[in-house]
Image (tube, rainbow, N blue to C red; front, side, top):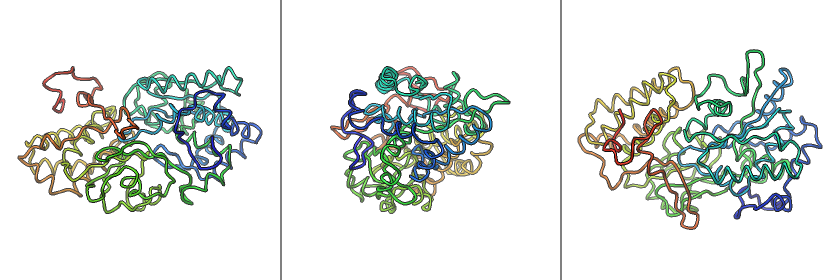
Length: 458
């Protein structure tokens, strides 16, 4: 853990707890244990740290709210959202694989600071290497006598996208399916009853890793990077039509052009569209000089999300690209509310017709109309994201939608869903899930080789 140039993601994995401690690991927790919890929260607030999971909410404010609620009602919990599954994003997995100790230390700081009863790290069962690293690191801390390390539980869960939705994450921790609740965790948390709300802090891996650094080196050091309103660094992922994809740590406020062109090697004139995950509007190349921070993106009508950018070049058919994003959200919907049952599935079916050259102008108009009401009575943000993705594509590339009427997307320009399964850092290659097209809205998979596996499952 260097006290010089800020680096959250080490170049090489930290091999053992002893190596971590030799780097200064444990300093943040030691300072937190010696301080009053209110002073720890004050330092986090002074740092300006904002959640790196997508919303950018001030972390200190979240901790303050849960700590205050717990002081009135008696019990609080802390949970780490390590169920990374946003398309185009690959940052929490390398953090867990290369330095699980800083995440665990951040969790222990949280246990002390909000006076939580217990802490949970929920991640996907298929992240086998990351699970093993977390478990081994936690066990090392327990054996070494780190304060309350035995009160951290690592919870493996399913591969579904909604596992990463914080209300659904609590359901998985409690042993159920990832179906989002109605009430947010800071109001109704883990193991809640009608008389015991048990408010729960939910932070993601990167946020908690930053907290460890802030407690060790101070808010002022954290603020040396980034902007006034979005201080620190952030891990950004780049994939798609770029020569050198991967995950890169940069100061917040760095321009999108620096990431996409200077770091990932794309030529600006080749860029046609960029998506930050699947819950935001399309980013066009005229915005490449936009600073990558929460406020600059919000002022431009965009969402920074979790910092995962998928780049599409001039050869791509934006109808087929939007179809893949829309289909992903339709498939991953839990189906609890009409917003998705009547909205996302419908839009994906119409997109499928257009991509196959069987769509009509009325299908395009129907998709457009559905973006206006797809969010009615929504239980989570998923249908909101779908509306943003689809409507922005319709408005930005109207001529491409018109061109798909009676004309299927050429096979050579088609792209898969940008669900990342691995990153080859040596080659600068980001690998997407090549089997995802077989997944159906009931979360089952059509058998390999089935003739229906390349079309929309009705």
